[in-house]
Image (tube, one colour):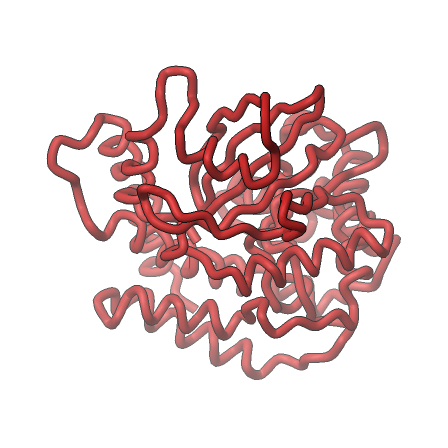
Length: 332
């Protein structure tokens, strides 16, 4: 979930011009004593820093305790370890000096829950970089993750119904149009069949930003949004940028999409009736993102805030305005 801008701003107040912070140093010390460099990389749903030590590169991911629970993080890591046991290439967590994968560290800003990951091999690719073979390999990578997920259960990982409840908790009847649309989506989803072949734990953010390519091998990172859904929902999330290119939205005949689907179907079946549900899951994702962004900017401008938080708040507000227009103009 997108963190609150107030929290983001408080943390970046501790970051210097070299992108270093005493908070990241304190957290990283739970894994590595002695000489190392720790530099903040980004913040969105999580804070992420790059850690270099003994010619090795790691990624330190940490969340304020008000944003995420230890129980969910542990469930996410268990899922990653299950996938790697099934030969899925993914970023592996590293045990701390105390032998734990998750450390809870008390800092001047409160408690942060943190994980250190090995840096996965490979490079990022952009949508424009991929030919049809690339789209097919992308789809095959998603099929491989889903096939490895079949039958794996962990109820500490939230289901789509938990996400719907989160939307209601955040909006609290203040956004009637969004909540009515959520109700319409839920009604259709509750009528769908659920079995081990069509429903399970999905990545939920299988975009190119979270893939690393090394020749034909694909490594998957950032499982922090994993959830229990119908597997086809991952298509809606993975191909969001592709769908957004078309003013009409989802196009089942688009050649890049058909290449992606061909790659997926080379690993596991996805019937046409499931593919037809993609627009429904795109709508559910937009509702969920709307709530996440609403929560992030709800507290409003901060006294004396820097320009970057003002600009980011305006950007997030415009995204939500576009989602609202989409729902008003094209309700289910």
